[in-house]
Image 1: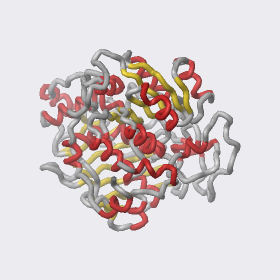
Image 2: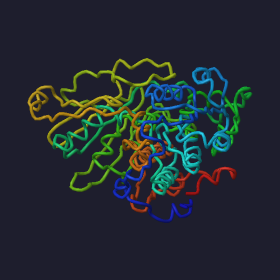
Image 3: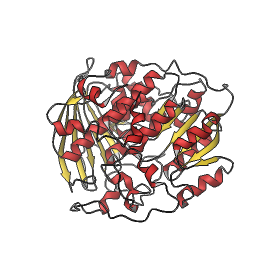
Image 4: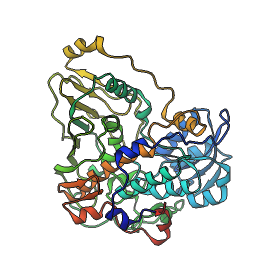
Length: 467
């Protein structure tokens, strides 16, 4: 077990060691041509979308559904779609009463609740597909990776679906061909409206208590979080606003904008995170706009990289000459936020190398070389990019069958999740952080260092912090 005390006092596995962890130990839990029985935890909103995607693969039987708000309007579509599936409000009862009936779980619940549910399912021997970001705290990600290492026969996949689309295979191919090399700077930007933009940064206390909906198990919704009275501003995706529950725009969209560069450039963990600009900073919810600078050291002959994150409606990044237009990204799941796409700049990334500049959109959208005249000069030198053999959902199920290896397992995505955790701590405290990737500690700020673990969970949840 990695205790909170041991975590703060000692180093854990290095990024290189984690990357070397092989998925070759994945066992075939069902016959290669048999459907995989799955249980779905979180069936509304994004949960509804991913359950529909898994159903489209034709590779699964949905045998159980679990949601703390079972029967609420946002859960009824999936309930009606699978009327024969057993129903639960508490994932612990799901595992206790129906655990023998399924092999894998899908988890689409608030960020802060990922950890206990994932750990419980892995303790029960289940393969896990969990939405991004993987965890809300650095320590939780560390424990989840440790659990995956200790259980190599369990398949894990984090839900950044672009990791099974064009950009993943293009980035890998262009790196191997030497097209992407000597990268020194990356810009990632997400300038859409966010839920917290309607809140008042001058607020002095948490939202007032409201009556809990009749369909809802509020205490189970809270899981390991510090108890709060129910308010609709925490529910149905509104949890994304709050430091205690969500990971802001960085955790929500960073997994779709930074993921391939982080993996294939082997960025690992930054040595510095600096909130260079925060607008509407407050103690409760995410700033209206944020600019965060992440500094990564040299790796295996590759130069240091400065990665700058921009969010906020008007907090636009500088654009290089010849950038051109900003096209919307295809295959991006719809949200229930109700915001329109910005007219100025769609979510995307700009990658600066010694010789070339690349731009791309979000999720699985591919990169292009800019300016256009340079792209034309390079066209004959670009290698053919292989197509994905499976989408992200089929990739997970095929891995459960022993046919493939997941592309975003915990040992890869966990480090990226920890990068987001460091960024959110910098946002929350509004001061620079200096991080030692060997000892896994923030060296210049004791309070920030304590946030790597967060507050002690409620007693009934302590068991999930054992590996």
